[in-house]
Length: 237
Image (cartoon, rainbow, N blue to C red):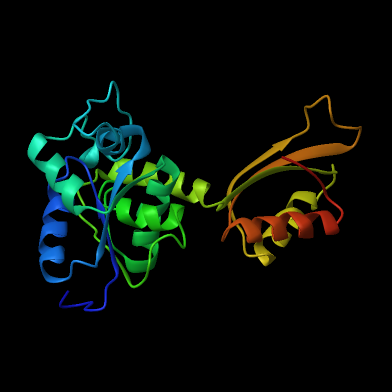
């Protein structure tokens, strides 16, 4: 309220409900019209079921990268706080969680664990739903470096930042160099190259080049593929 006095919506990661209930209590004591929204991972979302039933409901199973908000059953006290003070609870998928972690790291240089980035994931998955100005609470950076690497790769895949394709080119010196030179001119980064002459799909005098590329997003992927085709290469995915 001090930093964003005109805030209309506050979005908060939600596990057992303590954080979102406390945030809602503080905000609504000062500005009852502020909308407070909780966010749960859709594969560990006990609150939507519990709120619908009118009492805490235990989940049979949970499986999410957002282990910090994977709570199988709300406690009775936090359940009542959420039911009475929180305006809505939405869910987000694993792709949105990984994209949110990547976005925080790439755009703001903030290391946020998947559970802590759930509010940003909600903004990505439900664009235009929340009334601005919006505050997304980031609530945790406890993530293992190896897991963070996997999450970043998952997030880049979810965001359409990788392109895998195969090209058939003449089997003569310079063909591979020509392909890689064009890819570089188009601004794509080569992650992996496989050059094969052994395939039943190839005609005499052809080789197949399998490329894995890092791009700027779906539009860039489409442009790279179109430019390669325009240059005379036959593509398959």
